[in-house]
Length: 139
Image (cartoon, rainbow, N blue to C red; front, side):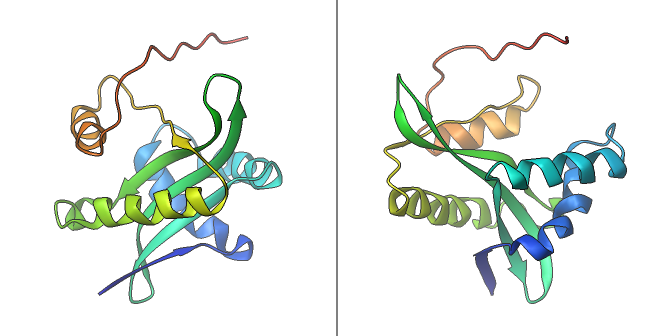
């Protein structure tokens, strides 16, 4: 039995071990610092639990952009490898979509790395469509 719930702010740092799996080149200290600032800017995170064990996360941003309106951005979506392919991700996203609707969102947008073929397949199955490219430039 899995439970899906927003992680309370006072427990938000419990996601760092899962973030380290996604971002193994970023130190725990930097993840902690960045997460602190993100929470200050409205970041929330859905946790998926098996009992008391955190087995999945989905960061949540509610954003407004002129071309889409108020929308939800899932961010750093991750389920521990031993729990994948059990329908947990699909249930997680059902929760996310309902949460977005409850916050007045009319769409969901996200980024997926070009090297993440499993993620691309998952998002296509969730009926996301590719609209463009995500670019980055270091300053």
